[in-house]
Image (tube, rainbow, N blue to C red):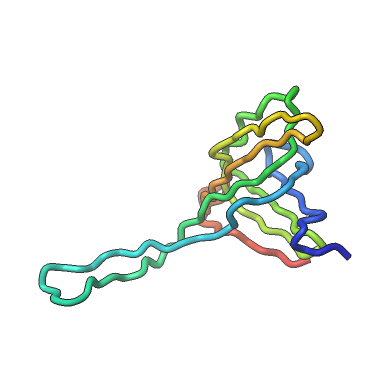
Length: 140
């Protein structure tokens, strides 16, 4: 059995722009969220700034490294909002995120190394019908 931290057996699939799954080599960052901190301080305070934590979560961008074929042009439709499914290694499960590619960076072409590209994915947290839809983990 492989070590789950290796990422062996992981894949990524885009809902409508690409058929099948992509060869994928890693994720930078994580599928995470944050909440804003709202400063509620006013001039009547004498010792401490006051704050509240916002209720709404904001999905954070993450980057995936995929195999690149220099002979194939980059697909411009990757920027559309769609369902993106990341299959985790060792049959752990899947993570489905609604979002789109907001940045594409080709890696260096180096002798004896696989050509790769980095896709930055920004979660939109809404599905194709504009309904609020956060990331979903599904266990296998």
